[in-house]
Amino acid sequence: MSSDDTRIDRLGKRGRSLVSAVPPWLVGHNPTRSLTIVFLATVGTLAVAAGVGMTVGSDRVADAAVETWRGATVHYEIIAVACLLVGVAAVSGALNAGLIPAFSLVASVPFGIGLARYGTEYAVGNMSVTVSLSEAIADGLGAALVIGLPLAVLGYLVEAAIRRVGSGNRGNSSSPLRPNRS
Image (spheres, rainbow, N blue to C red):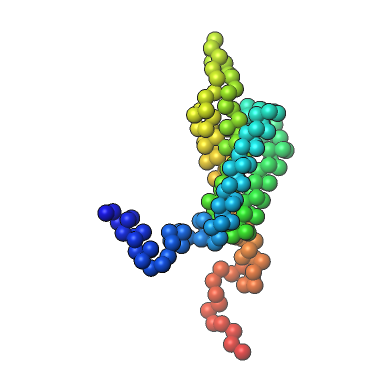
């Protein structure tokens, strides 16, 4: 029996679930709400993949993102989507959903764009190669980690900063040294 097994057994004996052992900032305060958000992210991934695949194509979106990143040509739609994704992460954090559900929502867009590559053809020298499902999933995971994770963390931090400034302690994270006694 490993140490992880004994830890889980001790949680069960104390009447706590495994969810209670995970910090709430990571998975959220409400497991049902967090699972609902992760499910919506899955549906969003499929919707983005279908939408991008049937309209502009993932290659055009990737080219526009790279041109904007390098500063060659500014594509305002890419900047607007990035800002929108940071806002989505902030709203998810405001719903006390945790960082993982916020990441799943934000990462669903770049993952869906990468997944939209499935079945497309590209030329390598004199050969024509079709993108397999495993290549499309790998591209989507790479995009989700490289693009989605920083945007999700930024949105989560924006939400935490807004909550801290908006609370009654004027942005101070700690309690006062001497509480006011009336």
